[in-house]
Length: 347
Image (cartoon, rainbow, N blue to C red; front, top):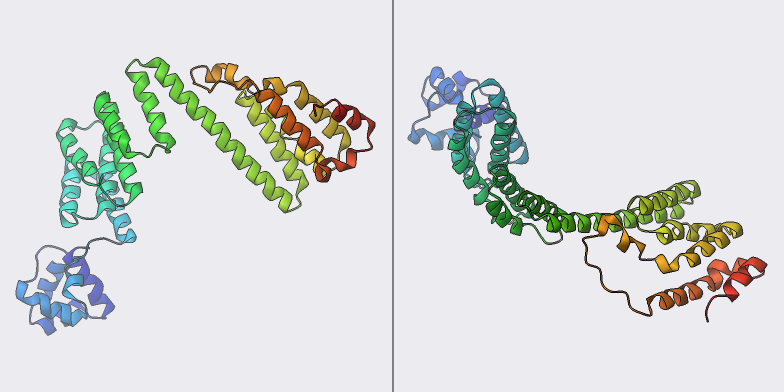
C-alpha cells in the first residue's frame, strides 16, 4: 500500500478529518490532501510525528515488509486488469513496472502481474511487443528459485509457453526441469515439444504413457468412490460406479477382462448367484487376454515388460484361491453350477 493510502486508511480509523490531522501536525489541510492523493509526500521530518499521531509504526506507515497480503495483491492485480482495458498497453505496463519496484520481493505479485501482461499480448496486438519480452521473462526467472513450489511451477510453465510461442523449443525444454517427474504436465508439454520438433514417435509414446496413467488414476478414483458408496449403504450408487468402471475400461481399451471383473465384488456382496457365476465364467474365458491392452493402438508405442512364462498360470491360481474364499463365495458352495465351475479350476 502506498504512503498516501496508508495515511488515509489510518486517519479514518482514528476518526480524524484532514483539517484535524493538519492542525495537530502544524501543516495545512491541502497538504494532507495532497499526501493522500499521492500528489506529494510529507517531509521526512514529519514521518515519525505522523506515525505517532496515527498510532502505527514507521514500518507500517512506509509499508516496509516482505509481503503484501493476499487481499492487497488481489487489489493490485484487479487494478492492473482495469488499466489494461482503459489505457494503452505501454501505459499499463509502465504502471505495473513501477508497482513492482515498490514491492520487489513479493513473489505472488511479481508472478501474477507477469502472467497478466504476458497473456494480454496473446489476445491483443501490442506494438513492438518484443520490447517487453526480456523484462517479462526476467520476472519469471526471478521466482524460479522460490521456496513455494506452486510459484516455481507457474513461472516455469509460463516460460515454457513463452518459448513455445517463439518456436524456441530448446529453450522451452530447459524449463521443464522445474516440474517434478511425477507431474503429468511435464510429460504433456514434452510431448508437444516432441511433436513440434518432428520427433513423432517420442510424442506418441509420451501421450500414450499419459493416457495409460490417466486410466489407472481414474480407475482408482472411481474405486474409492465405490468404496464410499458401500460404506454408506448406497447400493444404487455403487452399481452406477461399477458401470462407470466398466465403461472406463472399454473406452481406454484395457480389454474384456477389466470390463468384466469390476462387477464381481458387488455381485458377491449382494449374493447374486447368477451374476457371480456369469462374471466368473467370462473372467476365466478371457484370462489369457488380461494384457490385451498391449495390442491396442492406443498404446502401440509404449514399452511393456515381457510377460513371464508362468504369468497366466499364476493368475489362474490366484483366481482359484479367490473363488474358493468362504466369506465372499461361501453362499454358492451348494450351487451345482458353481461346483462345476470351481471343480474345473487348477489345483
